[in-house]
Image (cartoon, rainbow, N blue to C red):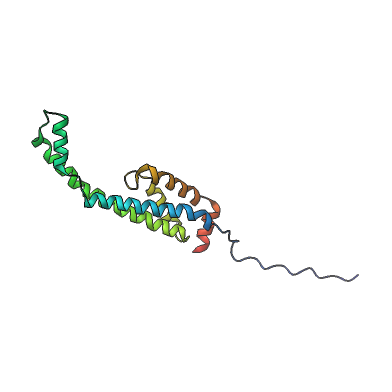
Length: 156
C-alpha cells in the first residue's frame, strides 16, 4: 500500500470571519441622526423665538385676577434667561447624538454610538420620548448584539 499524504491544511485565519451587520446598524444609525437633526432644529427654534415674559404675565393675570405681576416678573425673567443655557446644552447633546449615529453607520466607534443612543433616551435633550426613546432603545439593542460588537472590533 502506498501512503497517501494528507491534504494540505488551510492556514489559520488571522481574523474572525466577518459577518456583515451593516444592514442591522443602518436603521438605528439613521434614526439617531434624524432624531439629532429634529432635536437641534427644535432647540434652535426655541433659541431664536424665546418665550415672551410679558405674554406669560398677561396669561397669569387673566387666569387669576389676584395675581401680582410685579412679584413674579423677576422669577419668570430669570427662568427664561436660564433657559438659554439649557437650550445650548441640548443643542450640544444633539450634535453628540448625530456624530454617534454617523460613527454607528460607519462602524467606527462602538462607545460613541452607545453614548449617543443613551443620550437619545433622555427626555428634553431629544424630540422628547416620542422619537428619542424608541430609537435609542433600538440602537442599544442592536449595539449589544455580539455580531455587531465583533464587527466594530474588527474595524479597528
